[in-house]
Structures are given as C-alpha cells and as structure tokens.
Length: 296
Image (cartoon, rainbow, N blue to C red; front, side):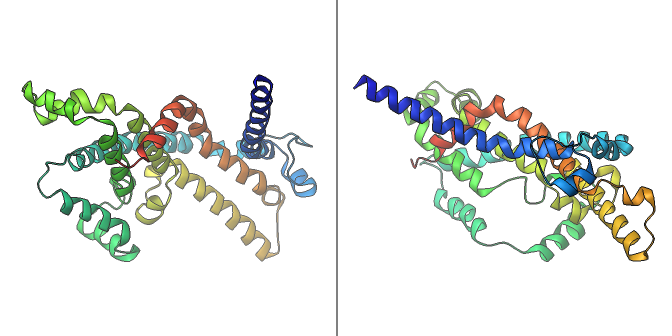
C-alpha cells in the first residue's frame, strides 16, 4: 500500500511539474524573443535560445523613458486606488446581502443579478460617461467605467460570507452592543481575508490590463496607462513602417525598426509586474476561489 502511494505521488509530482513547465514556457519564449535581433527573428522564428542576442527592442521602447515611467505611475495609482474602492463597494454590498434579516434582500439580489444579464451597450455608455459625468480626459476615465464594481465579485463575496461567517458570531457581537459597522470591520473583514485577497488579485489584474477605457475616453497622453501607451507605441511603429513601404522609399532607420521583437517586449513589460506580485497572493487566491465558489 505504501509503495502504491509513493508511486502515485511520484506520478502526480511528475504531472504537476510538466504542467508547471508548460505554463512557464510561453513567458520564457516571450522573454527570449524580445531579446532576439529582429532580423534573426524574421529568419529563424521564435526560439527559447536567441540566435542573435539584442536589446534593440527595449532601447526603442525606452527612447521615451519619461513617458513610460509616467505611464507605469498612472497604472500603479489607478490599480491601487481602483482595487481599494472596488473592494470597499463590493464588501458594503455583499455583507448586507449575506444577512437573512435584511429588508428587501431579494429585490437587491435580483437587481444585482439583472446587471449581469443586460448591458446598456457601448454607445449609450460612452454618451453617459462623457456627456453626463464628464470623465473624458480625467483620471476617473480609467477608474470608473466597467471596473469600479462587478456583480460577479459581489456574488462571490456574499457566498463566502454566507458559508463561512457563522450567524452565532454575529448575534454574539450584537448582544455585546456592537453596531453593524463594528461587526463588519472588527469581525467579518478579518475572517474574510482569503476572499478579499482573491478579489484584490482579480480586480487588480483587470485594472492593470485595461486599455479599452483609455482608448475610449482619453486623448491626453499624460494620462495614458502603461497598456494604452504600449498600444500607441505599437500602432505608431506599424503605421510608420506601412507608410514608408507604401511610399516606396524605405530609409535605413525605418527598415531597421524592430517591429517583431518590440511586440514581444511590449508584452513582457505589460505582464512582468503582475508576475512579480502574484506569488505573494497565490495561497489566498486558491483558498478564496475554492471557498467562495461553495454555495451557502
């Protein structure tokens, strides 16, 4: 029996190592391609080992280093502020829904679920945000539309509260004279650390990777996030090469632009901060997803 268990453990570890390697391999290939000379990349294709090492793609990106630093700062500020606001609003909506004695509980739950089924559409949303709330070319354009609060996150947090916060604990706190905000801040939130960390990662990823809001609502390049800036750099590079080729006169500097390796470098710069942060939240993420998915 012991031998069978050992054999299964060896097999399970081998399978997990293989899956982990398959998960990491694309990023290694991405990083290697971004450090490959563009001409060699066109001839030899993508490889885990660069046939000709080059940092030309990153040099091209950092020709406007001040803009990149500013964009990273905008992305970091928007991600931190947006994630914090999202968690506060989600918690303040999910906690009352988890209490069975909330008046109108079914109505608020239906109102939340209804927003998952229907959307106003892009054009009405754009008109509302720009002409009613006037968020165009403001930092709120990156914070509010589509990201500030999500019904799925509220449902997941409500499920966690229902399944893991005993009613007896809440009643004991009420008997001791604690207010609802005191119960929420002193008892419920500390017990909800796994789901909060999970939503923190999910919402943070959504804010960090978002480029659509910047595309729709921003024209001021001082407010561009890193994703929007990198998208603009890529479009400018493609437009420059296409216009030069259409004109029939491609000078040396235009012909040598590292278009393929720049794409890889742009992706690396976009995902690297998230890959650095994720290991610190991984254990909370797995636990929060597992518990938050259980119906209470």
